[in-house]
Image 1 (cartoon, rainbow over the protein chains, first blue to last red):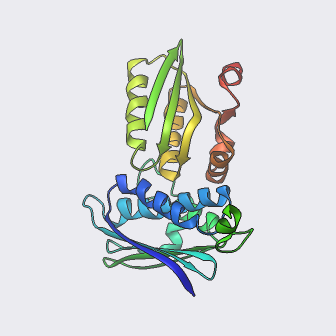
Image 2 (image 1 turned 180 degrees about the horizontal axis):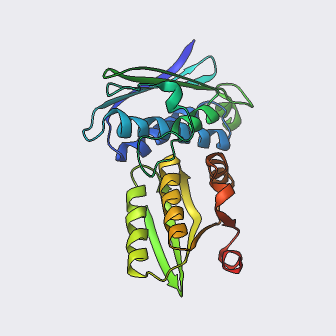
Image 3 (image 1 turned 180 degrees about the vertical axis):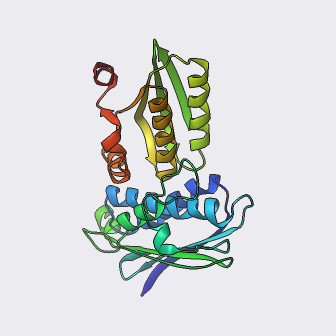
Length: 149
Length: 111
C-alpha cells in the first residue's frame, strides 16, 4: 500500500543533482532510517540523477522525472529519463567501466551497494528507468512521530 | 561549495567546504589545477575533508584525477579528517587502498 508519494520533474542540469538528493533525503526521513541510511540514499539518488545529466542527455538538458513513494514501509525511488539509453546494462554495472575520462564508473556500483534493491530498464534512444528500494533496518513507518510525542 | 588553499613550501593544502558532486567538482578541479600550474614545485597535495558534507562518485573522480596528476609529477596526495560516512564511499571506490589517509595535517606531513 502506498502511504505517501512525491513526483518531481526537472531539467538535467548539474545544479539539480543536489536538489534531487535533498528532496529524497527529506522524504525518506518519514521512515525510521538511521543517519547512515539517509546518507546512503543521498549517494544513490545523486548517482542516478548524475547519470541522467552525463549519459542520458550529453550536451543538451532533457527531462528527468523522479518519483518518491512509501510503500509498505519501504522507500521506493523511481528516476526516469528520455535520453540516449544504455546499450549494455551489465557492462555499465562494471566498476571500471566509464565512457567519460576522469570518472570512476562507480555510479551503478554505489546505487546497488547502498540500496536494498535496484532495477534498470533501458532502451537505446528512448531512455532509462531506474527503480531503487530501501527498507529501514531498525523500525517502521511513522516511528519518527512516536519519538516526538 | 567554497575552497580555501594554503601553500607551505612544496605542500598545497586544500580545504573543501560544502558538497563535492557533479555540480561542484569542476570548480574543485579548476582551483587545484590552477595552483599546481602556478607552483610547479608542489609535490604534496593535502585535501582536508573536515567540512565536506557530501561526496559521490563525481567528487571521487576529481580526487582520483588529482591523485594521478600528483603521481605523474612525482608527488603524492593525502586526505585528512575523513569522516565515517565519507570513509565508506572512499573504501567502496578503492581510493582507500591507493591514497594516504591521515587524521590531521601533522600526521600527513610526518608521513
